[in-house]
Image (cartoon, rainbow, N blue to C red; front, side):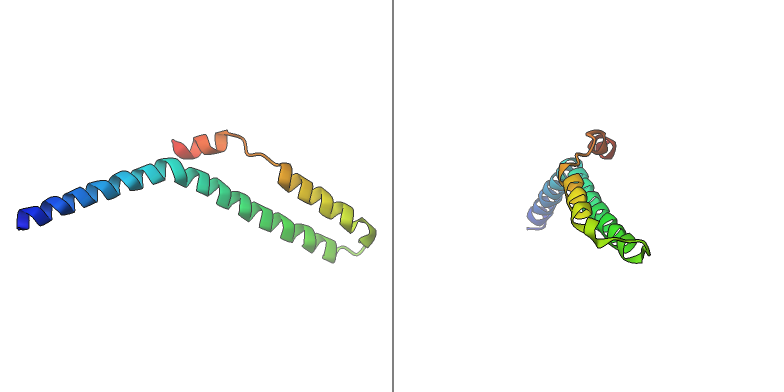
Length: 89
């Protein structure tokens, strides 16, 4: 009975190790890039809003244009493929 438990436990650990390694090698780099991109978007949006509200010479007529430019830049941005390559190494 003890041998059986030990064998099952080793098999479980091996399976967990394999899946964890696969996740770390394949999924973690992409998730890291996605998290970085989401954070960058949030910080950039906050900074644009802060700059607009703190400027004394701010003209609100340009707000829709500025928002459209920011949205277009965010939606068309593509990470350089090297970003993932650096994380996979």
